[in-house]
Image 1 (cartoon, helix red, strand yellow):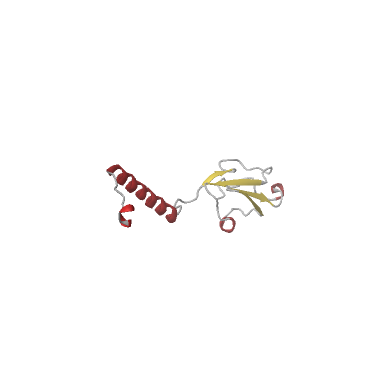
Image 2 (cartoon, one colour):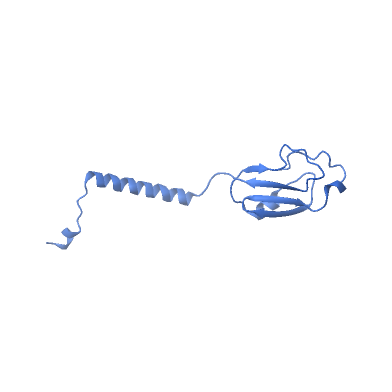
Length: 116
């Protein structure tokens, strides 16, 4: 018996179909893995959204739909009027804590409802 005939495999039609499906799914999986996540991040929750902000509010929370680059978010977050404070992170959640009590600031009774 020849050595080459020992390794020759006779594929049945069902075996061929199963192998083709596995190769297709493997290829599709590799394409999805290498193409990456193309969905844009979203704000899932903003603790001051649609809320009346009072002098007792000294922090707000923003929850994102996926992990974010913290430095990019902190650099690009715009708050009007400017409210000095500090950032802290826990996973996908950003907490912004005001650095001084708001009751000492003039004209803050009508803070905008959307700070993003």
